[in-house]
Length: 218
Image (cartoon, rainbow, N blue to C red; front, side, top):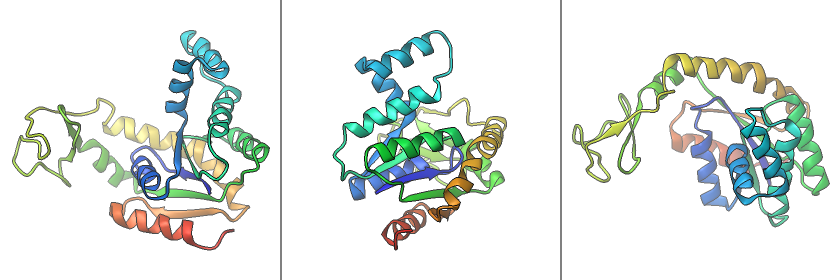
């Protein structure tokens, strides 16, 4: 099974993808991670990407598509794949069709995690982590049991990501709506798009996704 998880930053895609990897043995293909890995491994596409990045240029679609193709070629045909961060544009969506077709794969589901923008801002701007072990917390939803002390490692230093601020979150939301959301009609025409409430409890989101994946194929 091959699926795309869609949603703006902070919608919970990473969390749900990790759960699918653990529960179903799927492989998460994150374009950012794969680009870094290809550069480190010195693959032909990785070398091309490295040269572009060192020149300060954006990595073009054909290079990203090459990275995706290389990753799929390394997997057993029956291995399920979660596409994370790709496709982001209509052109990339068309490229993905070709990549999959060339490897006798099909795209089974596109799942969009829907969010409320104001609630998402609250969710993201309130989060912080333990500086020692990385355990996650939130100003409103998950404070440490003992104030100022990590539940997991008992450390006393915490940190916040500098881009977890309202302006950045709203900019990302606008970018998602402008660039990524337009690919949805392509998949809606095929009847493979499902939507899940990304603001629901994490377990409820996982249950909803499982019901989609275990349901009848389009």
